[in-house]
Image 1 (cartoon, rainbow, N blue to C red):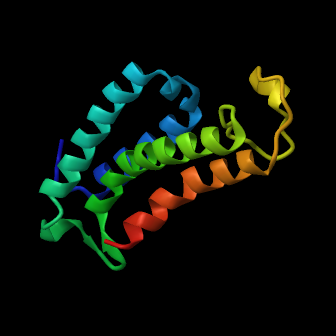
Image 2: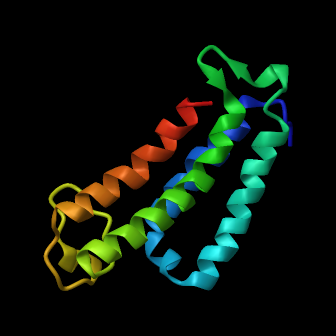
Length: 132
């Protein structure tokens, strides 16, 4: 494993966030959430320890900041899920275009809160890494 390779950090971050968003229902379990949170902290720590490497510098930032994406996803997921549950009183669903909640095994109508939850949990980690 070459720690000077930019694609390592980009792949770790982007694939990590994609996997977490696809299996978001497993994060409802607190024990599983905490275990995965530890792994995402370790990935972010890898990026943090290597952020000053000259070989990871890119034209528009640093490749090591991509390693923070899974951790940011976990943080935003926890905040937005609890906020959603306080406002709407049920679990949020990540929605897709022309998708219904019945396809996900949930027997309730999708609403604007589900759309906001989906968009924010997928976009906010990317926007946060742009601040670095």
